[in-house]
Amino acid sequence: MNNTVPLTKYGAELLKQELHQLKTKERRSVIDAIAEARSHGDLSENAEYDAAKERQAFVEGRIAELESKLSTAQIIDPATLDAEGRVVFASTVDLEDLDSGQKVSYQIVGLDEADLKMNKVSVTSPIARALIGKYAGDVVEVQAPSGPREYEILEVRYI
Image 1: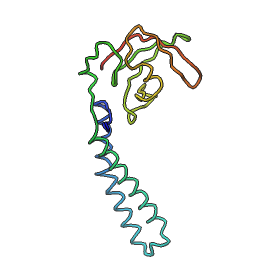
Image 2: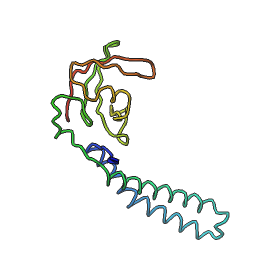
Image 3: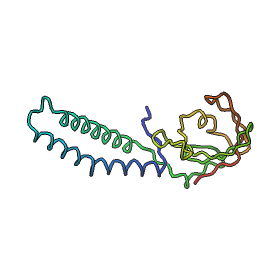
Image 4: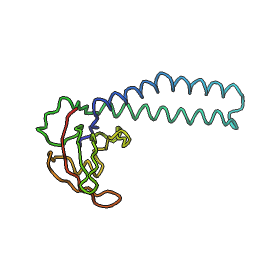
């Protein structure tokens, strides 16, 4: 069973930064909050202590999750791809909506990197699944929440 997590080089850097932040700042902050709450005495009815312990559990869980993802990551640098014009993971695709004429660009990224505001779509999204393996000039139909939409692939870039 293949358990690798695909990440772009940029996405891996973001996860490493978050991990560093959690380990160096958040962990220390939680330890200090627990110590402060303990100093207030009886822990059985201490809401600050309970909140700090919950925060600690969240931080430690997220650290474990990030370490696991990074240890199994298959980091892909789009600049080094040579997919001969085909849409693949980490490529940036320029599209034209055939109904509205609106043009848009999306980069196909891993689940953890997906951010529609930054035009980064998850490799598991309907639009990415429709695009993978296609070439510039191809027309794809995407099952969007508002109904089927057709897009023409204008250009595939590896940036």
